[in-house]
Structures are given as C-alpha cells and as structure tokens.
Image (cartoon, rainbow, N blue to C red; front, side, top):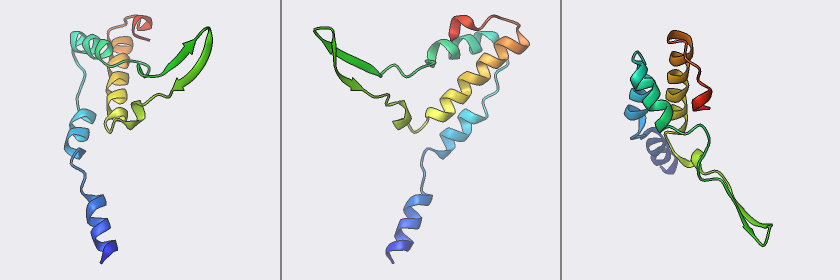
Length: 96
C-alpha cells in the first residue's frame, strides 16, 4: 500500500507543463534573444564568500540547483546565445 502511494506521488509533477513549454520556446527574434541573455544569469548569483578581517569566515554555496526549473532556464539561455552567435553573427562575449 505504501509503495502504491509513493509511486502516485512521484508521478505527480505539477511543473512538467511549464518545463515542456520552456523547452519548446523557439528563439527567432534578436531582441528576444538579447532580453533572455540579460535576464537569465550565466552564473548563480547567490554564491558568496563571507569575510571578516580579510579572512573567509564561511561560504554560501550556490543554490541555483534547488530551482526546479534551473536546467530549462539554462537551456533557454543557451538557445538564445546560439541564435545570437550563429544566426545573427553577434559577439556574445558581452553575455558571458
């Protein structure tokens, strides 16, 4: 009985429609591609070293992996960067 309940809970994933939608977004507009590259950061913005008196007291690890849509957002950013570089021929060094 417990295993039946557990399998039902693991099959219930309410974010799957949003994940599929993000994966199927087509980038075909340079303005949209630039916006996405500026909106989605290339590195996790939460990782920090806390220092006191020039010594590292503790380290806050990156918590982006806790975001359930992390892989889809990074994939979308990658598609936008590829569009800008391959189709538009722009230098993407500004976004890296």
